[in-house]
Image (cartoon, rainbow, N blue to C red; front, side, top):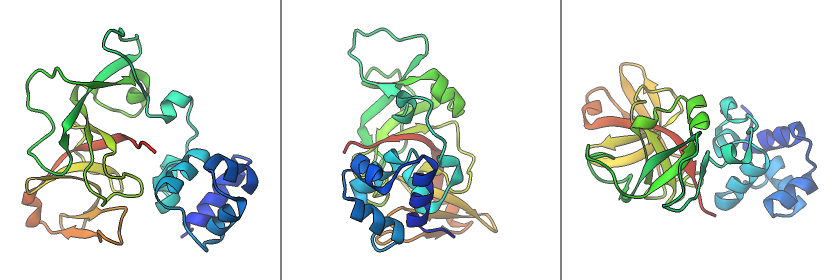
Length: 233
């Protein structure tokens, strides 16, 4: 299995960047890029996110090699998650949709994202075409904040994620919001033989894999699949 450094070097060559050019995009020295590619050191936190942006791939792919996350974006807006900022008087465009942003609900506690009532709070604006390509059900989508450090460096504390609550069928390795015995969490999920489930964090040093057996599954409810996330640097 390839290392993060090997994937980084491979991706850099695919998009025709020298180590010096890549270093300028990331904001580090070319020596640092060389050390990352050789495996002497590894990018963490903000540097990992910037490296993924420069290489036009996801942090997931750099860390774990998910080949589905290396497609070059069709536009800057799509790479940014298909949303933009606007004021309250800005009309929706033909290819735009508003997704509720529950700023007071963190994915760490609570019984669910929505209350089943009309939502009148802040919203984020996404491109319908981008969400359609991802198979997102916009009628069942919501944005919330992530609490804690278990998903760092990809999702630092305070990151925003978009969740499609209609997508609850588990696909191995994908990121989901779950209600775990009353605590709302974001984890990568994997099915286990016998009906069990493996919960995986990015910060494996502090949060090792959790293996949930079939009996313990009664305490877990899949809220929905994470289809987008945003990190302020």
